[in-house]
Length: 158
Image 1 (cartoon, helix red, strand yellow):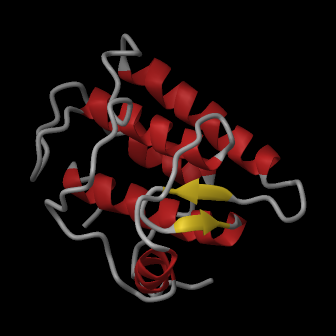
Image 2 (image 1 turned 180 degrees about the horizontal axis):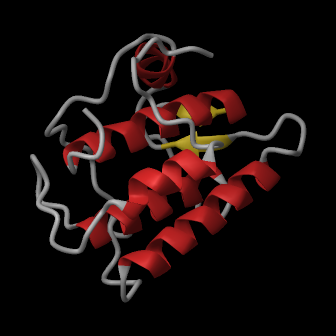
C-alpha cells in the first residue's frame, strides 16, 4: 500500500526508524504541540499496543463514519495535520513510564516486534479508536503516517 507521501516512515525498517529516534534529545522542543520527547515515545508505545493486542479500545463512531475516516486516512495520500486534536483516553499518554529516552525507544521496539507477531496470525485485526477494525496493512499505513507526523513535529523529518 503506497500512500504517496514523500517521506513516510516504514515501521518495519527498524534501522531507519531507530536512526531517526536516536536523534531525539531530552530537551528537543516540538515545532507544535506540547509533547516532550519522552511523552512522544510513551504515546507511540501506547498506540502500538492498541495494534498489537496488548490494549483494546472501541471505536465510538458509527460503522459508516469510521469507514469514511479510514478510507480517507489509510487509502489516500492524506497526512495527519499539525495540531490535530484527537479524543484522548486516560491512558493515551500515561504518567511517566520510562526514566529516559533509551528505555522508551527500547520499549517501542519491543512493541513493534509484538505487532509483527500479533499479525502473523492470518486474519488478525485490531480496533483503531477512529477507524474501527484495521488489518495488518492498514495498521502499517496508519503507524507510518502517525510516526511521520510526530517525527516532523520534532524536526526529525521535513
